[in-house]
Amino acid sequence: MQMELVHNLFIVWKPEYDLGIPIIDEQHRGIVTTINSLFYAMQNKHGKKVLGSVLNMVTEYTHIHFELEEDFLRKCGFTDFEKHRELHNELKHTLSSTENKSSWESDPQKFLEFLKNWWIDHICKKDRIFRDYLFNADG
Image 1: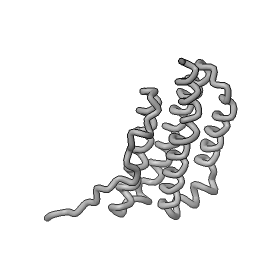
Image 2: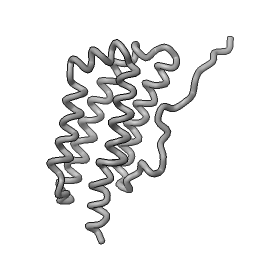
Image 3: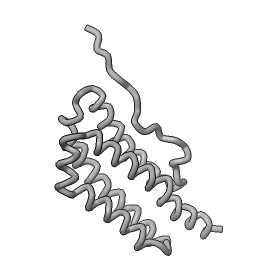
Image 4: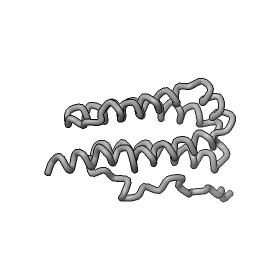
């Protein structure tokens, strides 16, 4: 019996997503991998089955990542630290919102789109601000 599986990625990692800070880049790729895992499950009709686990995983991983990133920014003296931390707090609140969880459980595609939009915007725009600050500060 031959089974057809779909192997497309929802987010293809691009070199321009790298910030040049190895641990942060690695964690960003980890988040993207998790998003792609949900997408794969959804393509194979298992989205609702894995959604709760993926939501928990993204929530926990996000907390770990934000703690590391904030510690890094604090140590580097990033001038817009509080503003950046507020962006992190907004995502943590969104992920823990009962209303959002209910909406995502009924339609995992909404969660997938939310994650893609939030993470790509954050990596490509918001994190670039501190990356540019750090590399310009070094000379």
